[in-house]
Length: 391
Image 1 (cartoon, helix red, strand yellow):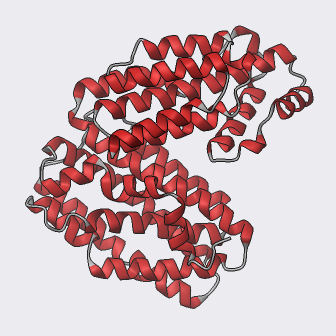
Image 2: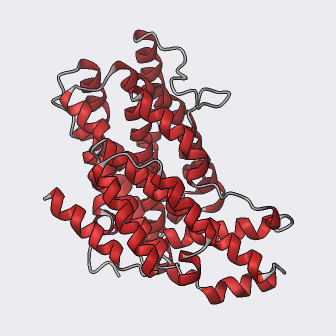
């Protein structure tokens, strides 16, 4: 229920912290406004955004191909036609700054794309094949409006390169284009409650991906932190496979999918009863299924806590808080048996070795209490405490 609000305004109101992080408060954007970004940070972002825009242009074509009427098509074409000029602008600026290829973190594919860029491009491709016109219209608006809002805050930057980006993407003309896209998106989902729910999920995904994209640029000059995180990330969200899982790979993937749905805020999708039913259908022994479920939750847990730790190290409290909210969602699935499982104990030990700030030490203290009680409510005290210290 939108409560009489316009869809696009309602979506932003649903995710205030995520919107602020992706479109206003991210340290990369603060660095743009204060002209404190390093050349390495800006150039990493610039080159990766150039690569991303090439794929976004293809995505725009896919959105156009699904547009059901001429008027909305005309509204979309206004911005799509500008992408040709945008690609040329990128090429000129890259040449001016002497950028031919950037592999600053060493985490790139054969085409020079950082992992973050690859994941965003893969998401665009997934949307092209899976979303209807209604959700595509929302996704297209969301990507553009976040970009416009982010750069509109940097118009007064004293760095000429940063100011040129703000002039291009933070302009009133681009803002008006985003207003047109909002109208298109709102008309597309009007009267369809299921489409509104799917649009909300897509909007949240866009905010998360945009935040990760700023992260990629901002982290480029933080060599020690980037190296630490690169070492950890292989275990942040990848389960540690047990030999007894052999032959049950499809069930492992199914559990991962179900947990991802839970992380989107749908905890009713996964209960111990659902787990038992899925295991029975897949002919997976109950003990093996419980091990898979515990480790799948544990790897998500260590990912959230380690990301919160990394954000604390950089002073990004709002981002740390977002990760801890995900922890709260995860604990809704913890039974006493899972909390006491060797999989979770191993993850807590792994995380504890890598905690490196006073804030994160407090995270671990409360996390230990949470696990010992097998109750999700103590996480709320952590979030409240973080909020108190942020005020």
